[in-house]
Length: 244
Image (tube, rainbow, N blue to C red; front, side, top):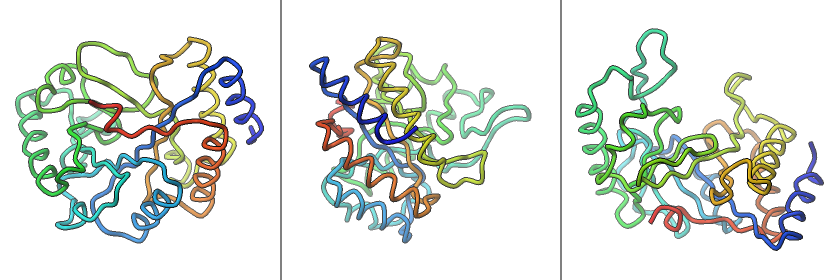
């Protein structure tokens, strides 16, 4: 798939009198690295709001306090340690872990992260590997005001959920850029599903990045994606707006 396909899909939204919206989440932040600096420079150049999912145990003192406007801090689990039982997919929150223990870990980590991030912090959980046992979801409140995972959301209960839908990393293919074709295909597919009613039209199309894994091609793709969508009148929404 090429950029023309994305432009044509965006044009169909305009013809229908609708304005497509997007949002951007980047995972696994915490330490000052050249890749994180590149991410923040891109955010500033593009003028696109960024939700930075930070691992509380990895957060360096002072790093979060100097984030610029347009960057919001979400909580990326507690320590990003895989606690999966044999046969389970990678997860920080195994199904067998008692809910009170998981919630206590999350709440303690939230307080640490909030104290470092200050006003940039939003009490939204983005669990590592996008996995969280469903029995924990209704128990996240009141400590958390929202949840973000991957894939079209299935809204249930009162906890706001806004997911991501376009992952630019090929996790099973060398952990590099998934490629322009695959990234554009995922973007157009979710936009089409929203426009046709096959997916929740109210859930903005979510871009998921992992700055530590980006190569030059991935950075170029992101630059062009921001330019193309904004030129077509699309809106990139801030997480403070999505999770109120």
